[in-house]
Image (cartoon, rainbow, N blue to C red; front, top):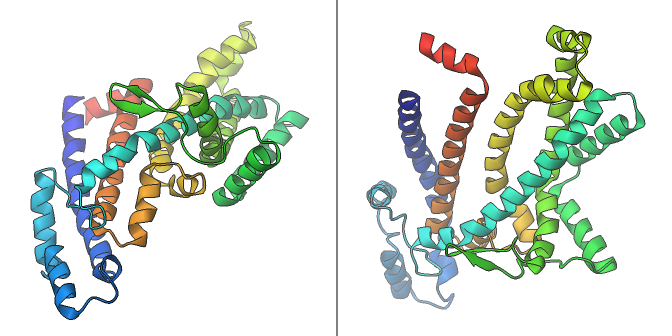
Amino acid sequence: MLAFALRRLLQSIAVLFVMSALVFAGVYAIGNPVDILINPQADQAEIARATAALGLDQPLWRQYWSFIAGAFAGDLGRSFAANVPAVPLILERMPATLELAVAAMVIAVALGIPLGLVAGLRPGSWAGKAIMAGSILGFSLPTFWVGLMLIMVFSVYLGWLPPTGRGETLMVLGVPVSFLSWDGLLHLFMPALNLALFQLSLLIRLTRAGTREALAQDYVRFARAKGLSMERVLRVHVLKNILIPVVTVTGLEFGSLIAFAIVTETIFAWPGMGKLLIDSINVLDRPVIVAYLLIVVLLFVLINLVVDLVYTALDPRVRLARREV
């Protein structure tokens, strides 16, 4: 297990290095933030001073070398707009994004697995057909439209839920969280539901397919022939086997929730990393954009490592295969 973790760590470092080069070249080679950040009436001397102060007068390769040297020291540059280090600025917004992603994943797992089981056990019933039709809608409807409809129905027409913001937060170990207060939960519900819709539909279809496949296996038929109740067969035999792909997909989709929460955070004015990214793109705040993308890549790498370790714990055959190699 330790050798596997070290090997994945080395692979992760290589991935981060390649992604840093691609992101840096893609972001730093496009546009000129000086045109946005300084007064349009500035003369050429002021523009030259601002360009030199931001380090944009250097060749691209030299800018990248300075960026890599700073990255090894934990410094990914200073925000052009806020004039503060980019990493603390992003980490300040990270708890809000992680809270939203965790809440969305909890909704997706808590509803997706039971609904998928129902659809798999009774595929021809009205409930199974309705669940599968709903999952198709979850795949098809665009996130921004669903978010706007949620605000229209629950905030404008019914007045049950607040339309935007994070609400009241409480400090837990120095980190602000909103799910511990009633006002925070009211603010969290709609954006979490909106973000969870695609993952919920995915888990429904994945669980249904796994259930249908497991029920056709000989060991399930043998368990039923021995007189075991359907509840025990589902808990011991069916769920244990379908959890392996579910855990894998859930882990990967959790990374997607963090990375692609931008639309949801923008619609609901949720003060997370995605909202910060949109604001930074509007002013071409390059250090914040690059730092955000690299932090997201790092989160993906860590999540993939955790998923692999959990997969190994769930499936003994994976451990045996690695010992044989």
